[in-house]
Length: 155
Image (cartoon, one colour):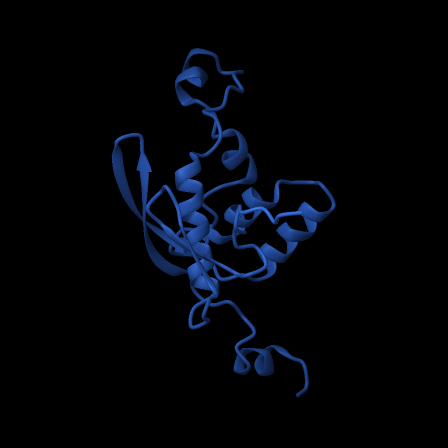
């Protein structure tokens, strides 16, 4: 195959449109649901992974920021939105120079988003391990990262 845009397109080398997913997570006593769009792993996630390896950004926040988008494929979050939260608009209204942020993304929501990313990128693949999370999301993990038994070997 000659490498050009036409042959790459025929080979399915482009990620295509985002995939719509429904997620649920627990926020205190309340169960919340949302529709999210997940961009299959591609160029943006590769760049994010490289930035993580060289210590320029958090790997999990980078993966979420690269994958979660709107229906047109535009990012919903920045890495800073995930790790520190967006700018607090109430504080900004009081002080136009405020840089106060709302705080990191909720843990249960983070797990639900990672579960949706995993589902989109592993469609049709089978998994050896199923892990249930406190968010109510089932997250299938590859055997290499699945939780290990806590039983100790006798010495």
